[in-house]
Length: 136
Image (cartoon, rainbow, N blue to C red; front, side, top):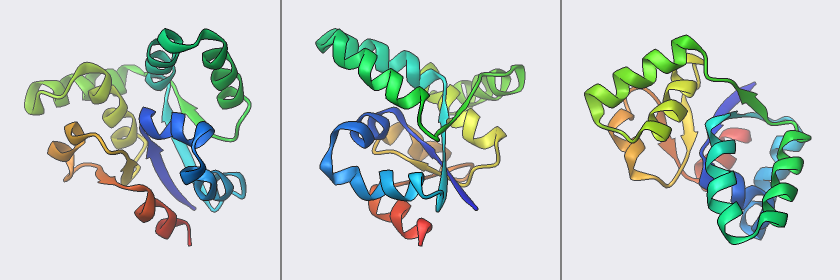
């Protein structure tokens, strides 16, 4: 089965935007496995919680009960993230997310964030359309 790492911005969209309904369906039907770094939970608490704490709790509860696979930050992931920070100067949270995918041998990350372009040789940034093609 194909695996993709899903960046924070698409996790929020997955639960709130009509544009991501098809992605939600392929994840639910297990046509692809969606991996998520636990760092995404931290980012969601901050970004969504600043606007609406009730929505933040709703999103977190839905995520935790979903079939997304949350990956904890291990020593190996943390060290790999440090290497990415050193070599590519990626922000810490994004380096931890990228390192999660790299250590888990994921080939693609669903993101619109330019920070991941520098690690394209390690994990390839893809958009929603490409993620859906992978599921077919």
